[in-house]
Length: 618
Image (cartoon, one colour):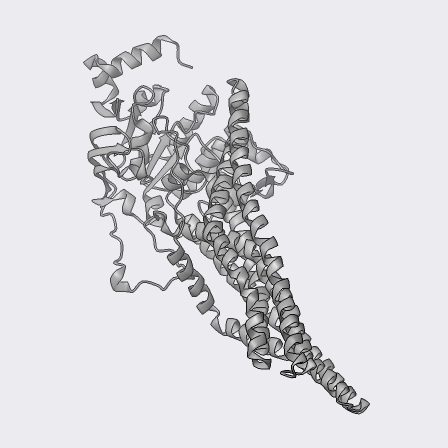
């Protein structure tokens, strides 16, 4: 059931190719990052201030050490040296405490911010239309919600505080060398020679890490699909083909990761050399100036120590450079989810300003339960809205479903039955034409309103980890136990009464493992609890054995009496019991009428009926 269980399966006439979820561009990623900072701006400013104070306290040590050297050379006493040493100790202790508190504030900032990122990601993922998720594939969505969000979390929690401390320290150290002696400061700026290779790295790293993330998503999608369909792969003898596809995906991952490794292997050695050259330059230039009496030995020592200390913060920045690039690409993928098509509901986005009421008019409400399909054309690709993407699978379908009637959709495989069912359920929107309920386009309804109007039940089913009660109350959170048992009884799920802990029985690993038919009965029980006015059954009893399916269908018929039921099925007894039968052929509605009328007409339906009936239906 689309609203309460799992996403529906891909229709038989849908194309196999997927459409990747978007990736945010650099400008959008920067805006999102700035919005994250503004959300907790006071903590971020405090973190910067504490880092600056810690870096300032760290400057005292080398300068005072130079003073000690000059004092000793000038014949100063032990008391002066001891006093300066105590000041060095005090400044070191102050730097330690300030740096520790700065990291504490930074980690709290990171944890709060990553919580917002996770919450927004969940909101956006839940707001995606089912059709978008199906075409993109769950592997990409899963990779973004796991490895990408984890990468962003690690950066916000660890990299941001570390880089802030290192950047502040590096700036203060360079400034101190310039203040000591401008000429030595010029030598010290030689450390910036590494900037050129860093720029070379940054120009290439973002795209390389995006490619690595895309390859990882493709591999995750392939492995997930292979694992889920392992029995089908084995039954059809597709092991070699799936193995070859997996090896190709693994090879793509290897190539993309090798590319990022190559970039790091160029960056890090060059930067290591850039650390050493300025220190050597200061010692040589300082020695020459000191020999001519231009500067004191203490100044040379202090400048050399400052530049030697500069290697640590720069090493920290470069250590995190890879993580920053990787997480930047990951954040672009996470933020890209906000650019995907959204279901027509307003989901609060913590990182974005709320739209004004004038900009978000209240959605229309259906005036009745009548469903009208008018001149509908649909093509898979780009959500069915791009006429050039794929050929149409529906061609000018016109149909009216009256409130309370039972309509059967029949036809050969690939005729467009499931696609029409998805349009009727609001999962997809037509490329041309309209599908309305109560004069309101179904696909434009808020999902909370839509699922009170129309519910699609497919042969796909899902059992969530949790108790039997949890799985049922997804459809009706306030339902009492009596209502839950009644829903189970309505779909013939007698096995539920025999569970050891009743509704509190855990389902899934470590508990009761429902088989295919029991899982489908759970999905049908959710339909009963959801209580929509229209139910679309797309082979909803296909996984049940014929006797159980017939029993379940009769039970559902009693429960759904007075509601509109649209049944898509190959078992034509469903059509025999329906008020009207709609026959689909090659994406067109070719016949419409009651069972008796269509049999008497001796058309396509009559041929289907006689062919099926002659086989002795169970």
